[in-house]
Length: 186
Length: 369
Image (cartoon, rainbow over all chains, first blue to last red; front, side):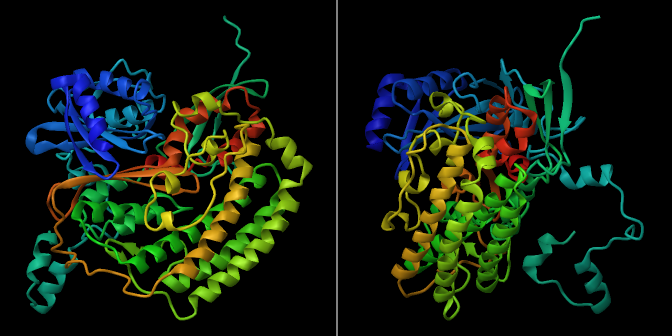
């Protein structure tokens, strides 16, 4: 059944999509930002994939790309299609799909704020969770959380000399750190 | 100067009627809402970012805190996602224990709803009863896992330890008690004229629009649409258990949603009894590697669970290292608390805001994570 669905999609969109059967009840397809709206509209209106289950974003910084994942579900076939789109990290723009599913608006707002991806035509308040944020979008892999915390917050009185517990123990006892814990030490 | 009859009212972030720290900006004409906008950001703890810096097992302490009233589905979801990516097997007995924990968590969460829903209409006795009864379930959790609210009991490869001696009997005793109490709840809450008047015809969701708005769980079933992840995509051992999903309440209002939950309360009790009866003997976990050296192969998984409030979905991505690349939760409140709530509140009375929020199951810790 999953293979039939995949064949149907590939037949309709030809070389605009590629995909595979991921596992039981999961079909994975790869497409582009220019085709994703057509794929989702076709899946929803013709094939009956009427429920948007999930809409997520992953930062693949090594490949200089973001990956958007749209998961859609059909109550009839009980299959979930995971459509994946790669977006350039330097100029991240993707199409807005909140006219297909109303709640996609919330996902897009969060992804815009947390990853800095612009959705063309998205009408929503700019700020969602963060307030007066001027730094890099915080869910990007190169956002340095420790550095930001150091810059923004101050130590509680009495905590200025906050030490690394492991280092302090070594200094006091002269014990060697186990190999695995070295990378967790500052 | 242009005359404007409307008033702006900020409901929250600290308000007894709101289900957590969030704010709704209401535009009112008299006491009728003409526009509602959800504002979050008061409870953002950056859990998803924190998880990226922790190893696969350390994430559990964070995951369960993503939703306070119902932490167990998150643990189960994440564990199942890791198992799917790794191809790790789970013993049969562990699957039964997982369902037992999930259903007990469902009952505990339903009992909290039994307190919140009538409580927001001014019927406070119900809350005293149901929160008191919830303690019997929390006692069971304490005995089983060591924690009352957050358990970290379900993990990849099974569950942490086996059931204590005689635990099944104690569970059954609590189930018998809750079944008896269910009739008392009916008399106090559902037979109450005030509750009926407040709930009927309020907070209506259009069944034709429900799917387009992404509605899940009791609000969707309250529109007469039969949809439940436990039936649609059975996980763990739900395909071996006998239970019903209600589709007879079709009005889409608070009253329908309340009836759906009332129905599901008994179904959960029945599932717990079946689990205790059918649970096989055997091991309860497959060994996992040393957590510090545990590397999960590159891949991703999308898993779903039916929580009390509806379908919850986890997207877990591994880049082949000892830490998750991305763990993204879409809880039911993420859908119900923003676009749906904003739509449903229009035309409602100011006094019904928290009443409607309770029926939709908005949960701010899950909305911003």
